[in-house]
Length: 237
Image (cartoon, rainbow, N blue to C red; front, side):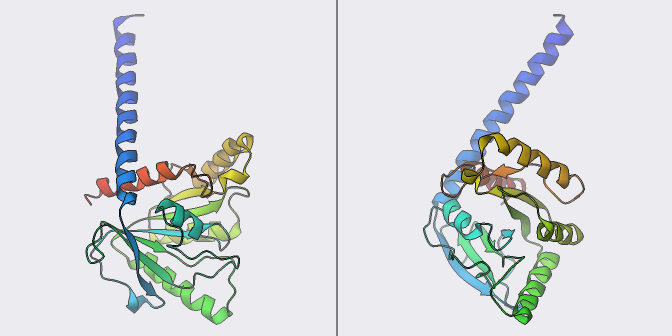
């Protein structure tokens, strides 16, 4: 091997070492972030009811039966932070949670958005909270990213593509989180991830990294916490 090739290999090794160390750092930062208190603070059914723009926010969106409440509970190490239900579509408002030592000045706010695709409510109510959700996405300057939850057993479906199109139009950064990984065969995970990645190539606002999670087994939660910690760091929060 000549000197130039050795230099390239050394540079690649150094970068891989740096990336690994950075990943470890953010994983630990994420663990500490979500080890803190997390409390429900606000529910908004109208755009005028939104809390002030005084803390960074990340939002969680997904179809009504995707396991959003279960993921929020697992992510925050709580059993009942977000209400779970056997009836899809029970989240009918923008629910805000304060993460950090102070409710008045949280490190981060988590936003549980109404599920889309199905809801056990009248069409007028569904239309009303859909408008609130759209207004929130279009005009929330402190919204760092939307995590779009996709059922890992089935992949992207038409209602999901509608949400991705809405986020693209709103120019909101978003990232795909595949859920229910414990119900997906290990041999099928790579294919599901690859087909999702291919679909995202057509969506300019999509963040390229896809995280496969399981609320029941805890798989992928450390990676998600680390991604959120890194996002806060990049925005100086």
